[in-house]
Image (cartoon, rainbow, N blue to C red; front, side):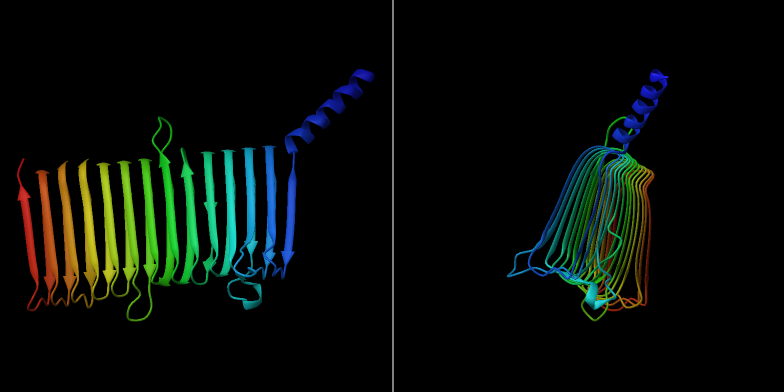
Length: 338
C-alpha cells in the first residue's frame, strides 16, 4: 500500500513540476512609470500581464519585461483598447524574450510613443502584435530558426515596424511574416534569411503625402514578397537572392518609387504595377545572374514616369505597359542573352 501511495504522490509531484509557474499581473490607471518584471525558467510557464491606461511619468516609460526560458512558454500582454481613449497608454515599453520550444507571445498596444520588442529563439515560436494603434510607436520582432510566424497590425502615423526572421539550418526556414500598416510617415523593414520564407506587406496611407516606405530583403530559397501601397511619396525596395523567388508590388498614387532587385537566383518572377494617377513615379527592376526570370511592369495615366528593366541571364522575358503616357515618360529595357 505504501508503494502505491508513494507512486501516486510521485506522479502528482511530477505533474506539478511539469506545470511549473504561472504569473498573472494586472495594472490599471498607473501613471507613475510603473514597472512589471516577470522572469520564468522551466517548462510550461505562463505569464499574462494586463495594463490599462498606463502612462509614462516625466518622460520615464512604463515598462513590462518578460523573460521566459524553457518549453511551452506563453506570454500575453494587453495594454488597452485603441478604440477606447480611456484604455490607451503612453510611453510604454514592452520587452519579451523567449528561449525554448513552442513559445507564443501576444502583445496588444494602444496609444502614443509605445514600443514592443519581442525576441524569440527556438522552435515553433509565434508572435502576434495584433494591434498597435497610435502615433510614434515602434514594433520589433526577431525570430531565429524554424517555423516562426509573425503577424503585426499597426495604425495611425509616424510608426515603425522591424521584423527579422532567420532559419537557414537543415530543418529550419519556414518563417512567415504578415504586416498590415494603415498610417502616414511610417516605415516597414522585413529581413528574412532561410528557406521558404514569405513576407506579405500592406501599407495604406491617407491624405496627400503619407510618406510610406517598405523594405523587404530575402536571402534563401523559395522566398515570396507581396507588397501593396496606397498614397503619395511612397517607396518600395525588394531584394531577393536565391531560387524560385517571387515578388509582386502595387502602388497607387503620385511621386512613388519601386526598386525590385532579383539577383543570383533562378526562376525569379516580378509583377510590378503603378495604377491610376502615377505622375512623377518610377519603376526599376533588376534581374541578373539567373535563369528563366520574368518581369512585367505597368503604369497608368502616367506623366513624367519611367520604367527601367535590366535582365542578364537565360530565358528572361519582359513586358512593359504604359497607358496614357504623356511628355516626360520613358521606358528602358536591357536584356543580355544566354
